[in-house]
Image (cartoon, rainbow, N blue to C red; front, top):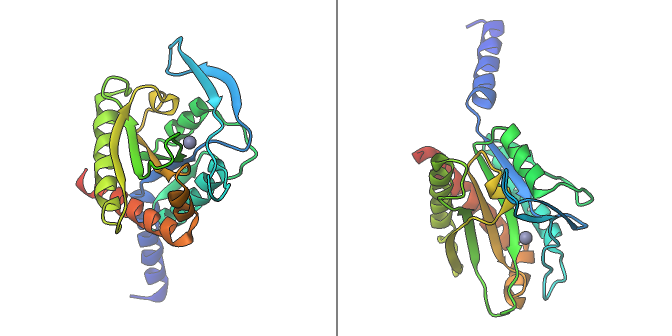
Length: 230
Ligand SMILES: [Zn+2]
C-alpha cells in the first residue's frame, strides 16, 4: 500500500474507533461549593420540591468537603474512561458553580448519555456505618421501564466489580423514588455513594489515592461489563 493510501486507512480506522462507536458517559460530581436551597420540582410536573443543590457532607477525620471529594474522584474516573475510548461529559469541572439537580439531569439528557454516573460520599449519624452503596431510580419513578432496567443492570455489574476489592463493605443497590436527578433523567443513571465520610476510618481511606484508584478501576470494569452484556 502506498504511504498516502495507508495514511488514509489509518485515519479512517482512527475515526471509526474514536467517534463512530463511542459510548457517552455523563459524570455528575455531586454538590458544589455553595449549596442552593431554593426549590425545584423533584420530578417533571410534580408539586413536591427539594433544594436545587444540597450542602453535602464533610470528612469527619479529614475535613474534606464532599463536593471536593466528588470532583477529584470524578476527574480520575473521567480520565480512565477517556483512556478506554469513551466520550465523557461532566456536569461540572469546578466547585464555584450553581447547577441544580434538574439542570444536571438535563445535561446528561442533552448529551444523550448512554449512562450517567453521579458521584457522592455518604453521611450517617451512626459513625460506625461504612461501605459503598449504589442508588438507582425505582421501577415506578424511572421515566421508562428501560431506564429502570438498564440502570439496575449497570448497578449490578458495577457492584460485582466493586466487590472484588479486598475488604470492601457493600450496602447494596437501593432503588429510590425521591431523587431529583433520577426523576428527571431520560438516560440510565445511578449514584455511586463511595463510602461514609462520617465514619472516621472510611473517611481517611476515601482520601487516599490508592483506594480511589481501586474504586475507579472497579467502576470502569463494571461499566465495561455492562456495555458488553447489554
Ligand atoms: Zn452527596
